[in-house]
Length: 198
Image 1: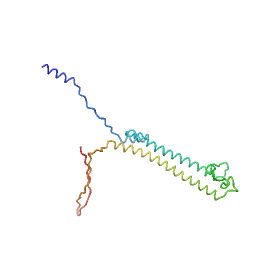
Image 2: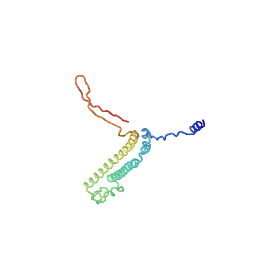
Image 3: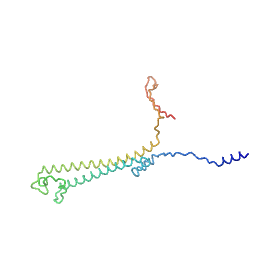
Image 4: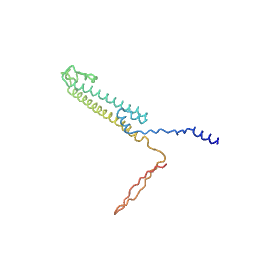
């Protein structure tokens, strides 16, 4: 009898310890996308792909550098072209760009008696080519910036969608030809079966 009382009292003193539950992160593609839209790199942080954040900002840095470089040169050559083609002697910003030639040989405003018209037209055409060149690459830099932004958003979405994708040895893919019965003739098809083994 004493043994039964002791046994029942020890049974009440024991506390069931729950098994340690493994935390399972389920990434939400919509949340990752919205975070990436709000602040570039935030979607990658949400997906726990911290190593991608420097690449995100390196891409934006390269695009901003390209935009700045091409815009600065576009403005410089556009101003030089405008100054070269006007009739105001005080506007001579083109002299900074054309340093290796004597202005007396090509400048119709500062040296109207000594300039060569073919040299003047050559410099005019050259400046216009530079204006077109830097305008083209400035616009492409803006497109590249927008494309990189969309690519980072897409990366965050795809990463979140495939966050818990199972890539284990228990997957099996089998491809085999199959005859599909058709009325009047025989057709050949392809059967693809996908099996997951546990």
